[in-house]
Length: 367
Ligand SMILES: [Zn+2]
Ligand SMILES: [Zn+2]
Image (tube, rainbow, N blue to C red; front, side, top):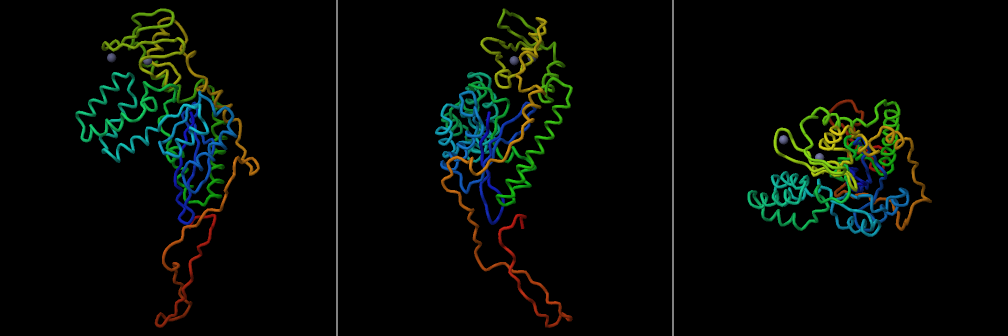
């Protein structure tokens, strides 16, 4: 699953947009596949970015690769044009931000229940509650109904999203990125590349040195299930299906391993690892539940993933370079800023002061 997003850089004189394509690895860490700089976010610039990405990442254009992004018109169209066979889902963070803007924070928070609904019935039920009991609920429900449910709700997704529900670029790069944001384009690209290569080195060293079979992320979740083992019992089962019931209450889950492993809790479908229900079924049969863990969660896979480095793309390799101009500087209104520098005269009385214009040409270091 590849996330696409753009965000504004914070350089005052040369504000640009930074385009990011990111994925998560088996240890729930963000890996930046590619980044690009463009003056605006529209259909042309997104097409340019995605066509280059497609050229570099073989296998990207495939019905098995999920693209997640916000619903920006230019971006939606660009994905449809450049990656027509890919499954394209919505970033729930952006959906929630929109809901918040139109209908308030309560509605936006409640939307979580719709994202993680495990059945159509539960989804509809939650939507009715929103409609009837929340301020602006009616309008919000109408707004939500207009969005394709298969593009964000857990129960309706066609392909796993590995727990990642957002494409937000700023969130992806977290602290490191915020620090780079003030730089001009060339320095920004250099810093991002250095940062990513450092990540590659650290993650590779860690994965290669690990004695564990699974990544910390997967192991922690499966350990949680191990500790809760005994909470569920298998009531009925045949070769491929099982009905697993909670000891404390009557809640039941249906596990099916044909054609692929699934459970009515939807965790195996979304995460590609066994849920607690699968685990207790496997244990009751004396089967190894680790067989159901996707290979992306193996330390070995992580080591292989980070054993490569990403060479910077050369100008000759760039695809469909139509216009590549220098960024336009922002022109500030009013006269040039000045600083007062005292003329090294002795007395304070009648001291003359020179005014120097502030140096304001493009520099690599932010002012
Ligand atoms: Zn229970
Ligand atoms: Zn389950």
